[in-house]
Image 1: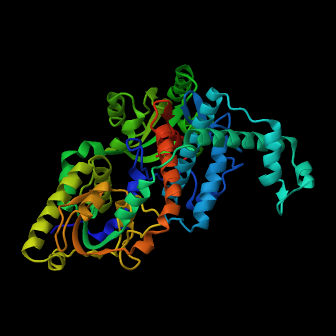
Image 2: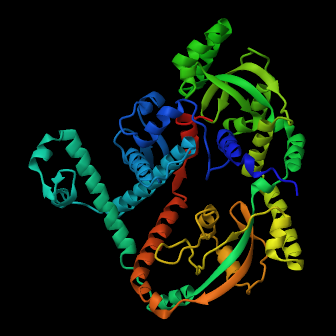
Image 3: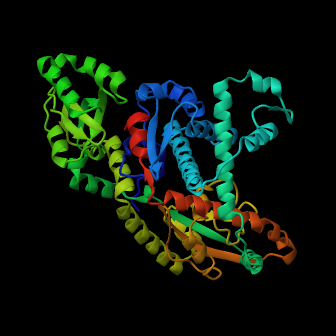
Length: 513
């Protein structure tokens, strides 16, 4: 069976990070081009007071979206900047740091943005409802748990040592938190659950099963298919080396800069450094090699991008209106077709297929999984896995533990390896429906779990003693609360009132593509 091979996994992840762009709003893996990896970790962990904001915008603020007209922004000392620092420190404390610092930074900032969006929405609801917090209430909270409490006692000395601005900011923060909590209590605090729900939960958890599982992943997509796709779509994988100047004020200013370039093209780097308002300015506008498809989200009209790829070396484009302003490009190296014999190019094509043409991979993997099942039915699961050169996972016994609640038996493999699959599987209803509908030694139909196709064989089933389920009644209220909070947060993030411009702003100002 033709396969791209597991040995490409690490490299492919890096290429995905480098080539991902604005078409995918859920899981981008950007490439940090402004700062070195050495200082990226510092930026991820410690954001407050960083000069990065000052370099990105004249106002020192970035607006990532809005909720019902209320802006979701970041600046030194803002709610979002505090969340960036808090989440990064939390990730560090839990030893969740990754070798891919660019991807980790995106995760931190995205999580901080979503928390800020929810916070903004709740305060918006509080304003509409007229929720008010008295100064006395804020004073009481500050004396109990504020930054001026030392060893459980309010410290007047520490309070007086704080600046007026710091005290005011702290009071505003506490006012927001109190109002936010009041809204959540009003909406979610009185929700009850029926007594029979605990019995239903115990019925669900008392049956545990274990399985053998074979996975088909994007790494099993044949290299021949990647080459064929690259040949059929070679135009979108063309590359051109560019520099640019971005003017965000108005078109007239952009035309003024363009006029200077017509007179003196050698001023390009100087004008990029002094006039451009994007992350490439400090490099004299240099963007490096860019693929056609990675540039597509920046252009409102396809013909503008097409004209860019027709530029000759050192030729300067006219003023082009892009999605982030008025831009002037210079061609540093003329466009070239992809070399589909080059391993790095093939990794780029493979990453593109995964991001934007995932259906091609999924269809292929499903067919492979069906073929595997049919062969296993005529032989056996383990023998077929060996003949296909596929490793298989044996799981521990587990119940229907949807979303992987830590109170209950976890869904995991025997041993410490290959747990990443189950971190996705626990959020798949079809995984549990399939796993708990087949009989002993029955082989399942292929199950789609994120980007993986799985085939299961049920090994055995057992019943949990009643006494082991007695404590579930105490856990259930917490579970209900967690689910209510999650549904409430999703309601906000799915609302038409929520405007999400995070990726566009992030990639333009923090980690340019």
